[in-house]
Image 1 (cartoon, helix red, strand yellow):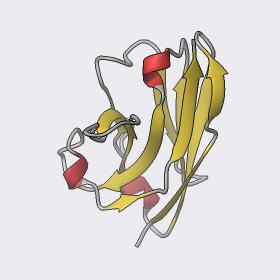
Image 2 (tube, one colour):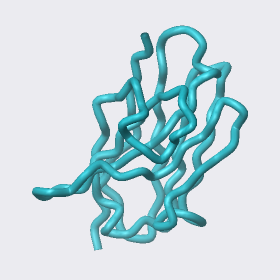
Image 3 (cartoon, helix red, strand yellow):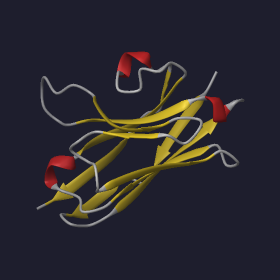
Image 4 (cartoon, one colour):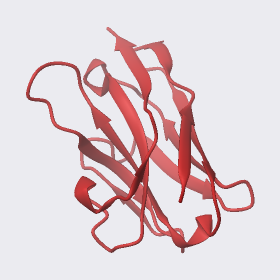
Length: 124
């Protein structure tokens, strides 16, 4: 069992930065691929992949955030981070941290554990 708690969300102006953190409890954190997903407000908006990092620190990014967001992890602290720079209003969403052990890092259905989410709002 893995429990995930996100923090670091907030309100920021376009062009600004935020760093999200996700603290994990439970054993064997380092074997999990950790992912960040987001869900924008409004009906019909699905949870979309943002970034992921494997236990071996291989990283994956959605095209929409490449060059602006950086995912990292600190296995000693059981924590994964998402550094978000050059934020845009379209980045506004609830951001979720998730953990999985399969190779399907882009698919939200492959993730076994989820945090409660943290709100990120980017004003124009």
